[in-house]
Length: 315
Image 1 (spheres, rainbow, N blue to C red):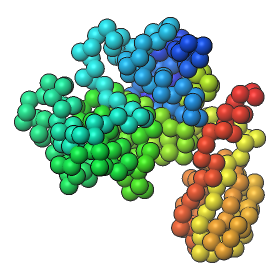
Image 2: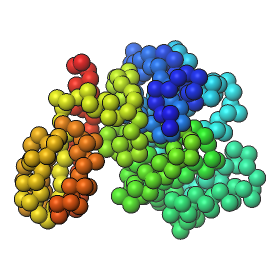
Image 3: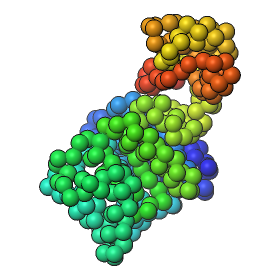
């Protein structure tokens, strides 16, 4: 997987000094990046400029300055290449009067598929996202999670090579989130280019180790999560572990590498501060198996990028 930070020649998605402003508001400021195959996470707090950058990269919004290319082409000047791009927006604008089947069929017909192929693909993606039973209902009656899955289905149904997923897990239940994460990993392993945005670091970490950090319209860092996190030792990660044997677990963890502090918060929960979250997560399964520890659930309490951005901005 090439991921983020590839050479310009190897990039499927490239942005060269791209900026976008709305009146006096600068949404994206002089961004340059190259993305190859595989899954790459675009991370930033709400309002950081992720959605605007996504729309420019996908050819939906014209940059105020700079150049965006997909497969070396400017999509807004070569619209036939849109068929190779899938886009799942953060905003929800599904037509409430259409049924799920009607909507997905329309999206595929606009891509000029024959009726038999439209029907085949609609059936497959409705089943893949467990929407078959709801396919004949108007989408205005869908739950937020169902609408989110329908947005994902329309982004993927035409089999695109480059896929933009803007906050794709919003509103999903835990099972649907796991299924969607597995699907994203599957697409990346198949050689697609998947750019996923989120303001929750743990979400993206579950899909990829390649990330681009953006704040106030600027790219702050890009590359592997390990590389970036290793540069932030002053900002430890806080993790809560749910356990039936909290005191046994706490006593063991207190002496382990990368554990800065341990607190028994309740009869069922231990809170751990670690200076190297990835090493901690990698070691934890072995510790549990080899030392008869009980861990029923892992919760990352630092689920926003505020501390990360504060550190990088200060630097």
